[in-house]
Every structure is written in C-alpha cells, then in structure tokens.
Length: 307
Image (cartoon, rainbow, N blue to C red; front, side, top):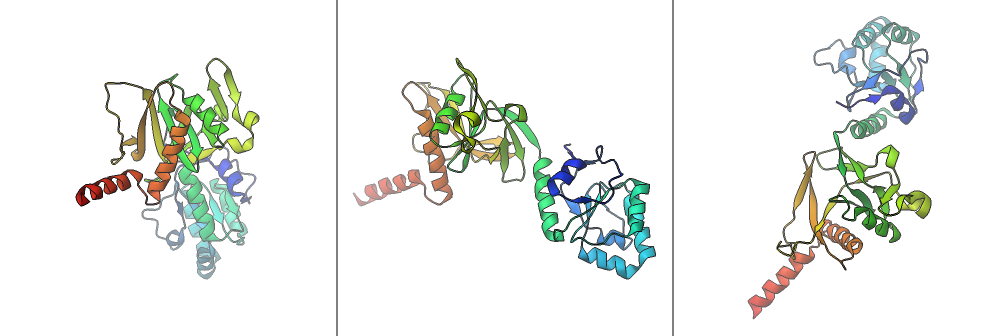
C-alpha cells in the first residue's frame, strides 16, 4: 500500500495549520477519498472510515451550531479518538477553541482553508488518486508527440534513446528515458513520469549522458504524460509477418489497463522517429473518428462491388 505524508498534503493544498505544535511528519495518508463526517456528528459511527481525511463544510458546521457546544464537542472528540489523519475546515469557518484542545489531546491536526468545500474535496481526491495510484517501473522511453503520450519499448541497445533525441529535435517533448514509472490513476488512464534522479537526462551510447533540458530548453521536456500508445521496437525478421493494413488493433496491458501497441521492425534506412510521429498522428485521427485503414478497405470493397 502506498501512502502520502501529511506534510506533503499541507504544502500541496496550502492549508492553514491551526495546530502547529503537533508533529505531523510521521502521519501518513493511505486513502484517496475524503469523508464529510455529517453522520458521525449525529452519532452514527458504523462503517466510519477513519483512515480518510475528514472535511468540515458549511453543512456540518451549521449542524454543529444547532446541536450546541456540548454535543458537538463530544462528537468531535469521538471522531478524533479514531486517530483520523487530520480534520480540515473549509470556507475559513471558525474553529472553536475546544476543538483545538481536543486536537492536542488526541494528536489530530486541524487545518483550515478558504476554498469552497466541494472544490477542495474534488482537488484533494484528484491529487491523492495520483499520489496513491498503483505503479510499476518499466524499461523504455516516454515522449509527448503532438499531445499523445508514446511509450517506446524494446531490447536494450535497439535505439530507443536515439529515437527520443530525434523526436526532441522535431519539436516534441521528452518525459523519461531508460526508466518510466507508470501509475494507474483510473481504469482508463495511465500516467508516466521519470524517476527524480534521471529526470530530463538521456543516455546515448558512445557519447554518454546528456541533459535534454539544458541542451534544448524547457520546452523540450515534460514531467508527466498520459500513456496513450505503445511502440515496440524489434529487430527485423524476414520470416515474420508484419501488419501492413492496421485494421485490427493490438494491445499491451499495464496494471490491468489495455493500451494500443504497434510493433515496428528495425532495419537500416528506416526513419523510426518519423514512423513514431506518424503513428501518434494516426492514433489521434482514430480517436477523432477517422480510420485510414478502414477507409481504404471500404474503397477497395466498393470498387470490387461496382466492377
């Protein structure tokens, strides 16, 4: 299970820490969803997911005012007794001093933000889903080509980094060379990034390590990118049949998500960079509803029918 430190959450969301005396360095967040504890404030603690961040909005605050200080303080103390990661008050709502005293007693930090409750909850959930997503690391190169994330894979030494360098020259952006970290942020989306230690670096055999950002400028690199298409480079085999029409898509699976995959045979004289570029554009056309292979097939079929 992956976790995110509460300190990182505070820095990312720019929340005000109302309990600065509490040590939050060892507190970890393990759930991407948040909880608005309206039912708990009413005394219902069955199925209470205390591992989630607890968010107090206008509805919960108004309910506590109607309950009165004594009941609200009792319920808030019971919530904190479950050792929740933290409690966040939205819309700059006032926090009673008794709540702050309880936070010191139970060691539960209390934060406050001026952001509306729904907007804050949505942003926290989105961010945590990325940070806590299942992940793997694979050997390959990830490049942003015309907005499409193209993951280039293949045996070591086949020329993936050289292809990436040529694509950068052609105006596209490098995300990662050699090692790509893949996160599954949803059943539809995979996000790729580079390890911090190798970000923006490319290894070229015979030359060594180059810094793409320093050589080609900030516009030549990108930190993260969705993985939309996989291109697998392989040595040319004259005895193997290669797809020449593209009527049926082939897929590769990462973390349970299927991604369109093309196998590109390598031989002298083939400009692999332009092939990758064309594959990305063709994939984009298909997403927009135009399939060149199907169009040709329909033309041939129509021509044979009319003959």
